[in-house]
Length: 125
Image 1 (cartoon, rainbow, N blue to C red):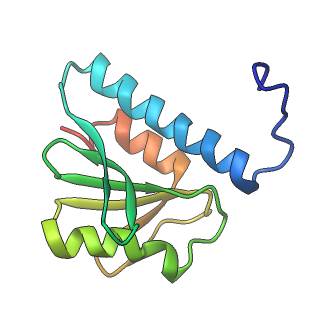
Image 2: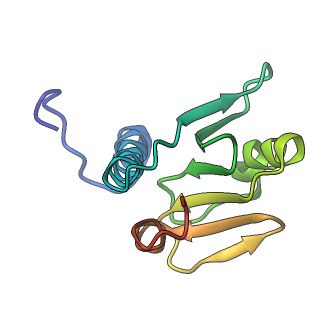
């Protein structure tokens, strides 16, 4: 990161998490623009502080980004709350895990699979 004169040397920590989230945001925004979908990209936060990183369209897709190699149950709480209130078509955690897995209605997806699915039109359409 040239502007801040900081380097991301490991795929962990707060700095990596923010950079990873921004990377995923930029891919979503690029796809949205390239395909001229005009989807809104927002976030969602409760009064109690639960937050989902990206809400696409009118709540059809909810995405939480985690830079971790293992998503824990507590990492799913914000998405679970969003699902309970809005029932999106798709709820995803994009992360560094090696394999895709599903926990209840939440898909936990390696970022490489997410990017492939995104650009193949399987996430936003």
